[in-house]
Image (tube, rainbow, N blue to C red; front, side, top):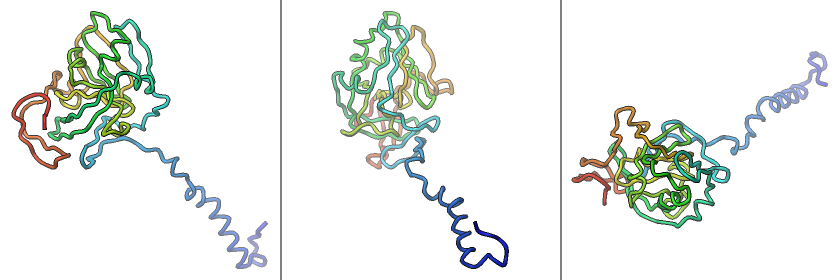
Length: 235
């Protein structure tokens, strides 16, 4: 034991004392494993494709994640990512357009909603669909928009697994609509019979959400482009 008596406390003892103090106070902080620092998904003006969430969240675990399907359907259930990947695959290139006046194009890989609907079998009175996301976001979509020939559930982006910041494990892409209809990090799909409002529509955004003519800044092209007609951006 190191004594603090001045007659016994030598310079060497003092150095030992400092070493013990450093071990107790400094080392626990300096040796933290970097893996213990959790990554958070939040808004970022990332070059080429901006990232948007309404609340910061941790990336979802792709192994334990399940897509819950409920409401007015004959076969409700929970589907793993591997199960969804067994559905007939579709690949398309389309541009996502934000109401903030920017857009970006990507190659998306996934499946058409009809592939899932053929399994869960929505009832005849299921005319609308609610989507619920991991960050607390929710969106309301008519069945007609879900079945649009360009609508796609995606788990790949540009020939790679869908990145966490862009909505992994699964997101929706509806090219003719503003991006707030293309729900990210989907947790649950619920079929309903009555019309409702999505998250942003309750704040005054269009519930119909068709892309309108105007000036668009294409991030991937680093250029401003004039949009002359409503609907999907074709450049």
